[in-house]
Length: 214
Image (cartoon, rainbow, N blue to C red; front, top):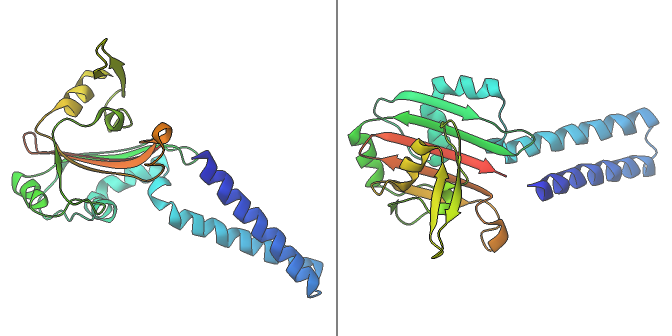
């Protein structure tokens, strides 16, 4: 994520310097040059906000989203909610474009069936089923008290360690899930540092959505 921030800062600085010399070349008054630079910087900032909207929230925004969960969920996953939902919990610990934002809620059996009969989010071909892959599960916390880490047995097998309730969720073989890596999926050392995960649990009718960047 630090590389993205550096890239955006470089764009803003480079564009601002470019505008400065262009206005100087055309003989604009000094005041106009500074006004132009401020305008361009603000414009680029707004563009950055639009591009990284999924990762820009404040604590207040997260609380406000509880009352608009259906709209936000559809925008982020492409899945419409037609049935009732309850037990809504929105959590946001993003700071400086790093952290996790999650939405957790309970819905109906028919709603989950309708999603499973359709296409999963993020251009995936089909829903995955079973335990959440370890490196993927270790990236999320959702609304649980603590996250999880990974332990490795002598035979090389990995296991989840940490919050017992989250471990139970991630190990549940009845899970249906869809995920996407938003960055570096081809770089072994950087995989799962930036992505999105949606878990459907027909057994409990709970839904878990997370977007993160670390």
